[in-house]
Length: 192
Image 1 (cartoon, one colour):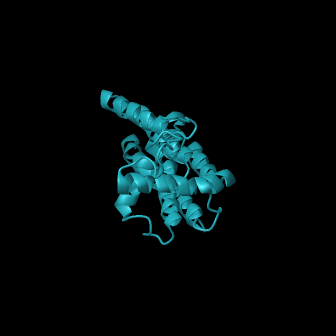
Image 2 (tube, rainbow, N blue to C red; image 1 turned 90 degrees about the horizontal axis):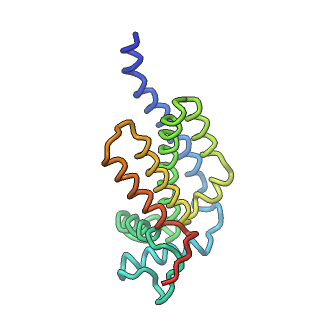
């Protein structure tokens, strides 16, 4: 009986985690292109991402690097992958779709982390559910903000640390992810 339970345990966690991710994806997809209003920071970061992709510059304006650049470099990868700024209509819609994808991945990471740290499926369900329905999450995580990208890399770093495989490569991947999280941070006002 224990062998049967051990066989179905990971599959059940994967199923429940998948359901929580789908719920989060549906909640954040609803009206994401109209709410909240487009903020000037979103346009700035998208312009910097487009500048990096199309011109190889960190920003469209000379001598204007006010944040660590990896956030918009990462965003430029999304633009390259999806075919540019206007794939989803208005240019900032592309940023909102990217942030939706980031939120969905963050939800999955949060489920995995909570399960690894607490060992409780119930705690994992509650943490991802409240992460998905939080008014602050709906308001801020839909926007192309560098903090949201930093959270993605930070959660990924923690997923590597709490991996069930204790191998050096997971710690190296965790360190790289943590470094990328720091270089996405909007609070590190750098002046070049």
